[in-house]
Length: 515
Image (cartoon, rainbow, N blue to C red):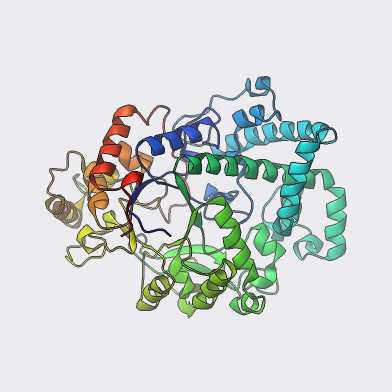
């Protein structure tokens, strides 16, 4: 990744405003890009774009290759001729500040079905559309054919848990798969079309951003959900039992987020099988991720040095063990396949980090992460303190897993804060030399003024929003991933203030110099 001073904003597309109950790739996304360009921000960081399953988490998608069709813009479907303007007239009265995923998915699916009907009528006579569609479908066939069948079977059996399907399908008997492909051919074709539209809309938005000097930072979860098309299609790549349940699952031991650790439930990779295949599954995953984004953040990067493996069936992540993984071999294979040189990857190196993780990150020239909310332990050598930042890190006020800065401050200043919380806040105020009246801007200023090449703030912190705007609380089973920005929040006064700080800290694109 190019190491020049720059600024950016973290906001998942689901959190954009809009009338369809969830943010999408349409007009509001382009309005955000215009805001970023006008304020001198060089990066828009997002979360994974995969189709979400239980819990609505983008980090637990039912496919690491497919796109979340709820992000498809109905407005842009009208512009493309797949819907009529009248098709949008019966849009429900959705909440403006939260995503009601159940209601949204039903409505969006109905619109996509109408669009598919139109596509079927048009493609016989529209040679250009047919050629474009076939080009996308053929180039993506290596994952799309399995995913489209998986999605059609999910429709048929009403569940993404493929272990609940008939045994001949969950165990992938060839004859049963061929019968299903024939019997569900129209459903399979519909899911191909949905992914075609997703890809065309997202790549169009990325081109729009790039043309205005805004680069996209994507996000790649290290692990894959067990209920995914990926595990169903390639079970040999994962540590599964004979009944295809995971043998061991991923997580992290007890940490600052949870006293019992985090149990993610994802099956662990069979690294021996991946190595035997030349890591091609991973190479293609990264290659594709870098067509959807300019830079990709690898979530839970420390898992490329060692993974916390917990026996399947445990209720917490407390009793597990660290098992080494061949991350150096993997990154070497990826680098060789992509032509060598520095990889356009970021390393999410938070949590329990050991020297081997640091060496792996540094040897491949990846930037790490520093989060200002983690800085207030009382240790002047805490690496999250801005005076400890280096040219090898990205500075964040907080991430999607943190409270907002205003929420963090409120939790440490009220009567229930406790001595430890008040001590953290007092240290923070003294370090930043502030009375805390606008602590969110104090945080933003601190990371921008640091030597970190890239400084990023979630939109919630730019807006000074409280805990009600938190995106995710790790360990909480529900109520996550639903926050949305209200219409009109990116006002001129906010833009002027952000651009002024970006200029003052030498992070405007025209002032960029390698560091």
